[in-house]
Image (cartoon, rainbow, N blue to C red):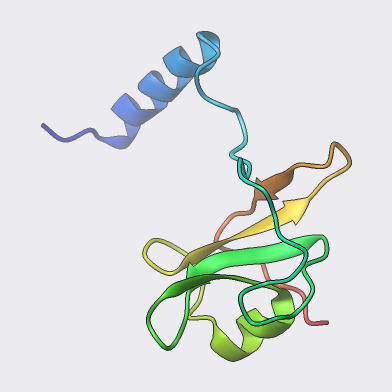
Length: 98
């Protein structure tokens, strides 16, 4: 059985009302001081596939060199906001160059 967009929206709304789905996805684990390439992680990082194949946590600088892009099967970008959480950004988000 597959869900269409309407069914997904209904399910997400119901789960949100039950308090089981965050209105905005955020990173739940610890964020290290440095990424998998030794570069410091500041307010932005990418959890994504690398051109070598494995996935990694990458700073914007490492992402520019090693990343494969954002989106399904590629990676997602997270930005720290005022509450200290790193929130997932839309795939159209442009990772800043540092």
